[in-house]
Image (tube, rainbow, N blue to C red):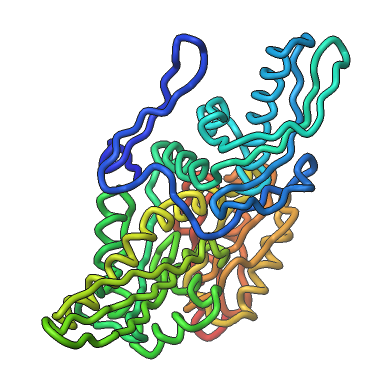
Amino acid sequence: MFNRSGGPFSARLEMKCDGQYKMQCTLSKRTLILLFSAVFIALGPHAANAQEAASSHLVKVKSEGFAPGSSLNSRSRAISIAERKAVELFLTHYIGLPDLRIARRVVEAASLYTDSSRLLEFSHTDGGTRVMVEVYLRAERVRADLAALIFQQLADPPAVLLLIAEDDSFSSRALGNAETILSKAFSETGFRLIDPLAARRDFTRSQLLSILRGSDNDAAQLGLAMDADIVVLGNAKLETQSGGGAGNVSRFTATLRLRAIRALDGVVLDDKTTKATVQSHMPRDGAAMATRDAAAKQQDAMMVASVLGVYGQRPSSSDVMLTIENVQGSGLIQSVEVGIAKIDGVSRVELIRLFQGTAVLRITYQGKMAGLADGIDTIAGRDFHIDLTQGVGRELSCRVVSRIGGS
């Protein structure tokens, strides 16, 4: 769908001579508009009445526009401004985009994402025309093009871990059919793919199946343990309808549910189910083809969710992320939190994750990073002290060092 070099799919906005934007696309196997099954509703102070659109890939947003003058052309300009504001509302209140500057080209090309508009009311006031418009936006096109813009500007591509069972099982030595399709798509697009077999080596099959069937938090903990930003996990269910007569052709249907989960906080970024059916007289080939087709239907959606999810987890300018290794028990981490809270400039300490001896803290801090680092490095208890190991920007790493004999 998108990559840094304009690979399988690239999209760009070019200025036309009349000042409007148009989309120029290069397509291969993937389509420009992703038609998700979910209906997206934009919410916000100016979109409180947003409702589900009749079409499952559209979102309805109410917005206002104003243009000088009282002519029909003024009304048209006001409607165009309202459509642009509708895109802004969708970006800020549904996607949660903190800064619209990165989406400038999307906002300025609002007409590309507007399926239709309905004029609800207009008035002539303050020397111009004011309109209230109901705008139907192509939500998934907005998400996809925004993700393409963000992906090109990310310093590091998202790290993604895939864990997909087929009929509640998977091989410890080879990828499944769905994993094969998604691994290829993520890798070719430029994501950093965590070796899907690495989790099979580090965890037992029963542990992984428990994670697949468990909570979103379980999946997030797995992602942190495997150094992943995003975990895409799911299960494919296979159904076979045996054929009869000449050729003995059977129908194979794969139903694949995938969830994209952010490892940092367990937020579900996307949750989709797709089906694919093929006919074959070869049972093994038919089942594999159906599963791969079901996975191919979701690959773009999972990549878009992964990019938007990683971009949305960026800490604010006052947040510091601290990773602590070799944590033995929740009591110790509580002692560390208390110590950090006493450092000048720290207003909040929040435990994000504690899993297999590794803790992640979010620290709200105003001040020089050297002061925070020095403060953390002096935290100590009766039987431990903290050893700061790395600091890059507003991300710090340290480890707990035990004192022999509790001295």
